[in-house]
Amino acid sequence: MNIGILGGGAWGTALAQVMAAGGHTVRLWAREPEVVAAINDTHANPLFLPGVELSPAIRASDDLAAAAETDLILVVTPAQHARAVLRDLPRHGQPLLLCSKGIEAGSHKLLSEVAAEEHPASPIGVLSGPTFAGEVARGLPTAVTLAMADADAAARMAEALALPTFRPYASDDVIGAEIGGAVKNVLAIACGVVEGAGLGQNARAALIARGFAEMTRFGLARGSRAETLAGLSGLGDLVLTCSSTSSRNFSLGLGLGQGRKAAELMADRRTVAEGAFTAPVLCAAAAAADVAMPVSEAVAALLAGAEVGAVIGTLLARPLTREHA
Ligand SMILES: NC(=O)C1=CN([C@@H]2O[C@H](COP(=O)(O)OP(=O)(O)OC[C@H]3O[C@@H](n4cnc5c(N)ncnc54)[C@H](O)[C@@H]3O)[C@@H](O)[C@H]2O)C=CC1
Ligand SMILES: O=C(CO)COP(=O)(O)O
Image (cartoon, rainbow, N blue to C red; front, side):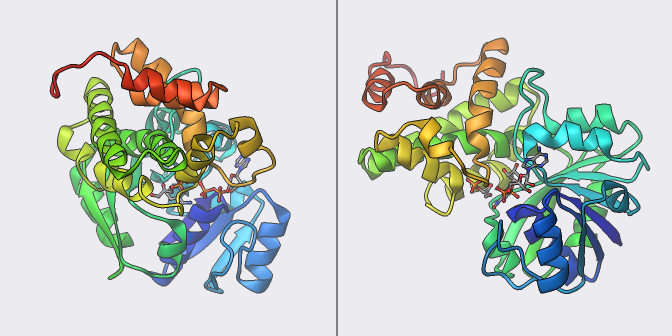
């Protein structure tokens, strides 16, 4: 296939590497001229994916129209920029595979809803799972959920993109695949806080389990299936990012747990910690759906500048309740 990739960050670049390894022709759109030049001239992306030698078959460009002249488009911009980029992308009706993780601020829309509004003729899919970009780009074994509303189309797409070390599992639960990836970023921040504040491993396990309960409540309210949330794109990704400083979201939480302020931790960074943008949107969307998400609310409070000891105290002082309310 001829594949266009929108976004030359760590994940767009890693996916370009996977697609090139599969023998596809790859056209990668990046905003930064230095990223375009580095990929074309030195087969590297030192700004966003340092230390990885890229396939010379990957061609980068800052021309969005060039990425649109393809059979399939992977959308890998930060979630809050997805609509603007999709709006500028010429409409050719080819499938769009969403690989970003987030919920649109203001509208509370999932990216599949955003993409369907901007490209009504395109079939929409979601690719999501436990996938640190550096490991994927180095060819380490990875499994993902690949969801499209048409189950047969999802299975065909999974077949077309698979490598021995990159295994897409087909699903028809687009919303479930998206919600897992968006919510786990917020919970990864919470687990980083536990680490940074020295609250111990019991607390982290409790947070993963109670966080998963939140993800499930919210996911079911928005139409996900429970088994999708318990799969690669939900629980799988939650476990990955809640246990490693390789996660930018976990690392952000670690700093917050040490008592540093979000504004200071976010200043000047070029890489994205999506959970910081998702947390307030998720809390507003959950409130609108009448879903309780105390861990996510604690993260949103910390990001808004609340003091870490007070936030942890509030969480621990919540009234006792049944495990499965
Ligand atoms: N890095 C990873 O391991 C993974 C990342 N993702 C998701 O992929 C998405 C992209 O993340 P990364 O590639 O890691 O980004 P990154 O943190 O490596 O790079 C930042 C990206 O944001 C782009 N950007 C900044 N301002 C923009 C704007 N106004 N319009 C369009 N793009 C803009 C930059 O061009 C760059 O591509 C996120 O939603 C992330 O959650 C998903 C799976 C794995
Ligand atoms: O989504 C990811 C892994 O699946 C990447 O996590 P971070 O954005 O927290 O680094």
